[in-house]
Image 1 (cartoon, rainbow, N blue to C red):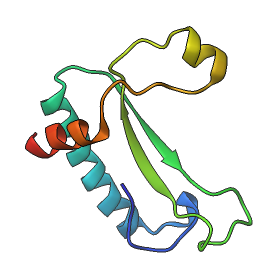
Image 2: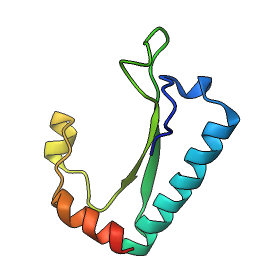
Image 3: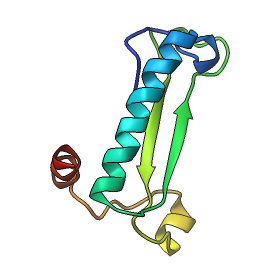
Image 4: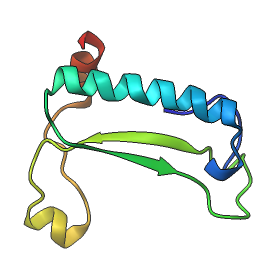
Length: 96
């Protein structure tokens, strides 16, 4: 979820920008809950470190449902396997 502004950092966003992103994030979380009732999730704010210009990064929020258990591969490599095709996940969320 991102705002149309070109700010690189979350802490530089205006209250109005944050309000828009908050409403859309709430809607996204509700859609995830309809598609995956009771599934845990994380909401992560991605923001540029100080000194990064807006043309290099745009602050945004990511909603990450937790639908599987982290196992050895993920723990050892830091790479998370996605067992669901993105096209399928997008279709389920659109229908929710």
